[in-house]
Image (cartoon, rainbow, N blue to C red; front, side, top):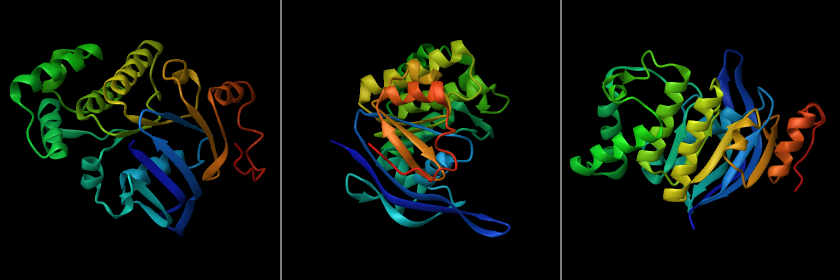
Amino acid sequence: MPTLEIRDLHVSVETKEGAKPILRGVDLTINSGETHAIMGPNGSGKSTLASALAGHPKYQVTSGTVTLDGEDVLAMTVDERARAGLFLAMQYPVEVPGVSVANFLRTAKTAIDGEAPALRTWGKEVKGAMENLRIDSTFAERSVNEGFSGGEKKRHEILQMELFKPRFAILDETDSGLDVDALRVVSEGVNRAKENTDVGVLLITHYTRILRYIKPDFVHVFVDGKIAEEGGPELAERLEEEGYDKYVGTGATMSA
């Protein structure tokens, strides 16, 4: 069973005042087919964790390990991490003017798999995935994320997830800025990818509304750069009622 294992991960970010510690000892294990929700207040380090796992150069891992089936993820370049099976749906996807969605998807799929997808089957697969996500066919000819609405950007991220078939998907606030209808469509895309590939999912969110559609196996409360508490879906329901006040400024430590 594929496993993504994070052990005592410490990460800093460079600022004008020097290196600022953000993650302060994160321990987390995600197995194939599992969905882990990370919830927490703004500034707790959730997106830093996502960026560090993906290999963003702004974030410096100062200690700890990240392994995928025993392979050292931190020793891999960004493209090597993608080929190993890591996928990041970004909170703020970047625009790529002049590169069409169709060309981007095919080029990325070729880079990840090491060979170009067969044109006959690839076209049908892309068309089917776009229809499932209720994306108009003209979308394929537009430049990547240029002029996209928030909902279009998030659907494009999940379109990539469905087509690239990663082993582990990190979804950084995929629910941000989505209305109810778009949230449902995006969530259905994630669930469809899970059913078809048994992908492990690390879902980062502030709110429980997306968890009504994507059911987590485990919920982790992230505060001050580390996990303050963890449990099952019932923990998310409690957070909906109580918020994060009990964790902030208390120096809470992880409990099962």
